[in-house]
Length: 446
Image 1 (cartoon, rainbow, N blue to C red):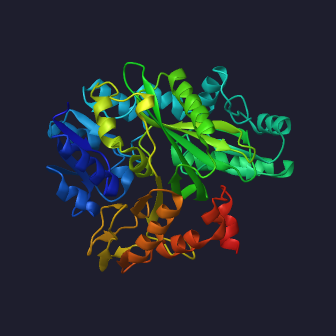
Image 2 (spheres, helix red, strand yellow):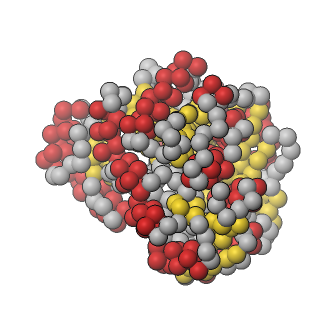
């Protein structure tokens, strides 16, 4: 097992990793920007290193600075969390070259599956269901037009190196394709440094379903059930739950089988997530593999009892999977609400100092956050400041706990999306499980 791990992230995920390491008897080093010098994750670690100013490109995403911090503190592994460098194949490769273990998949895995067009090709060659789309990266507007006509409108243009809804454009008419193609390329270039795009059929009112997998270095893979992440705004998830209200045991087994086959085709190792679209007729289609821990991983932990961060660390250290597929049992139901520092009406950022922070508690309630009274929400990073997770014997109890917990959650001094989550939980369609990726548009319109 590793002796000392550098946590190359900030906020709640950094604190989550530090806590898991402590339970495993591993020392931790926290990196931080100048803006995060007094952060809770910094105080929780055994050592700390400032890696640059507030701008993440000069600190948390600054590979030379992060690696310098790792070398001077003598760590033998780096945990990237999610975001920042977590899906940077070059960073993982440099870690490997200097003898520091990257806690995640190999650099080859990240590079291969980070190209979403190539990932689709690999899965399709395995005979697994993929969303109808272009055979690979589109080189020109003419190629895009030809593919769109073959597939049929509406279509969605996606960045091959994409994530977080960036570099994506939905196109419903031929005459809009050229402008959307150029816009998607430009956004992909500015966000990911790669203007490559591909094209898929755009399904009306699908569900976004993802399957959590774990794979060891001996070729063994298990899945931990699905998460329904359909409630999104501009492809950014707001509410997640497991199990999905519409996935029965037969469909779960089939989606799990396809997820395992997909990662085996790519010879994937460590923890990851296979994402699917599920249409109204319960046909599902492979979209991509996320080669990192997901923001919403806690709900899977709640229903399986498996600590995914610890498993990431053990798998990276070469330990074999300790469980078989038949050992995985889903118990009850779990929901996660992402609490963002945003105006819940306008979705504009709300940085500032939290004058009062009172998290909820009680049976079946979990809060993942690095905030406290007096914490400052800085404007340089993602606006998520907490994840509120509930668990119950069934979906009804999990929802009831979430309503109660939202009512108890006190955050003053800034605006948050807690009122929005209150309204979503009270919505009749949500309560019945009648949601899709277009749910929030209809909800906000009402």
